[in-house]
Length: 280
Image (tube, rainbow, N blue to C red):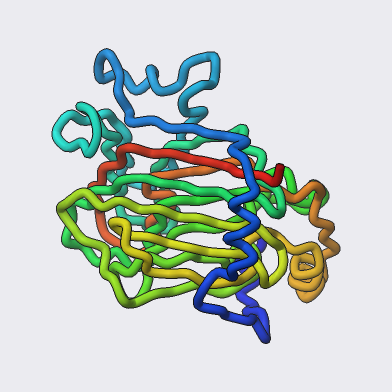
């Protein structure tokens, strides 16, 4: 439903550096959640990544195009840390949007917390990857249960700028793209990504993106679903929508979380970490 609401917010204040106040706030925080995984297993069985105690990954998302299948597997061919990585073959979308990723649920990231996601990617393709999505940070529980088709509001890392400039996509929270066109995403080599979000439903949210430890984007802006934004967006469609509280992010998906426009893409993921800091 929300994907049809292509309404851009008016008057967004775009500030190209995080405030000193936010940096000072973060220094007063402590780690509330910490997760890391480098896809090491005793064999090549993907099931080892999903133990019953929930200490590793919690699931996968695979949505296949109509006539071909996406693939997730463990690979020893490429790795940035250890001996293995997650290999993803993401097929080109047709009438069905292609998705292939791994998921970590059970997060609790509300307003005023800082979420830092790090991962290494190896894109083994020369295809144009415009609009390819690599990481999603999502809220499932905040969706109004009276409105069908939960769209999992949240943030996404997306390739933009005509091909391979990594940016922060905010369409699923009713805000516009935080884009950069200064640093291209390298191909056929390991690339380290760091994505940091100081969460706020207002324009004082902090958004940072680093590629190979180089800061490519630092910009203030809303990065958590906002009650009035959702209410207004849906009211224009004649729908009554109440964002559920508390509003927080509880899930990360990583891989080819959506491949709407590119051709078949082969990529590898390794050395993933998720950290949530909260106020003392």
